[in-house]
Length: 514
Image (cartoon, rainbow, N blue to C red):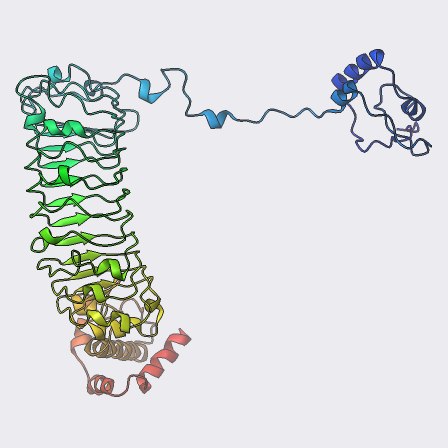
């Protein structure tokens, strides 16, 4: 532009005002007079008032409310729609509100005695249907509706031969129709297996209508107290894990005289109890609770095989209670005390039947603290990782020497896989190491011989550890036809392993050249 621009304003915002704001400013100027300072410094009344640099006044008068509105920056609304994606006001768009029955998802054979429907994307059942018994076989024995959006337990009252009911991973909030509302008490009386894990059930009392239950799964619900079990004398397995249980009720558990497995992990239990009548219990799981000691296991001395108490607060004193691990268990083969507060292994010194001991993540610091395991001649695997002792020099070697019966330390097999029927290239010692060195020398000699005779580069993968490893049949003749030089090189393994033969040096040099 050739015309000379007007002098710039002292206003820090040099951007041009939008027409809308300018128009609004003109309307506002008609109603409110401008300050005198702004009239002197701005030739146009359309421009926002600012203080003149040459003005002698100390400060301009405060802007009016209209001027504040004029200067206010208009901020675009935040895109918050994504935060309301789960809010479905329209019933048609909420999957849980869509009415979909089992017969809408699949074609039901009215003669089939077992019905299994596993929820898939877009085909989740939301209603069992009050007349479900009319769509299935009258002699239905197995009903599995897993991973759906079912909220109400219904339609099973007329299933007189039902033995297995599974509503795993749904939205069921109440146990209904187990008594059937009839004198015969069906279908509850006929059930052998009931699985309602991963729901939102708060009261397990109605399981009392199922006196012939053998397996009961109510894990991952909202149960606060154990109820309805005292009459279930045939129950062999119960899973109440991941609930809100605080007390192992003696009154409820004492009637489970045939119980073999009790799973109570991930609750809020502070004391082990209620087991005095459970004389057939083989597996007990109370991990991830609030235990500080192991106690009240007298009735399980001759039956308990597996004890899982990981992620508690059990220390040495709590592990030596007279009614707990201090007892002489005859069948106990697996103990899990991972992530507790143990400082040594003394609580296990007398448990000669142990084959697996998991005590990772405790505070065991020295090899002397592990010395108590020396007498466990049946111990096959021990987990000591994430203890201070696991960072000690030659940790694995010293633990293996301490307990000769071990075949596994942490997640690794002792001596590598070779000693257990597999080929291995790392770890181990003794005869297995000598054998691997012998194999490596044979490979090196064959490799050097090929380079000399044929003048071709040998593929290292082809001769990894002989034809028995890679299935290569082309060199079997050369493997079996050993020269005197191969026999001589094999004998050198008996010398100290730190010395290198001339053939090894030649192979290393050849590989570097390649």
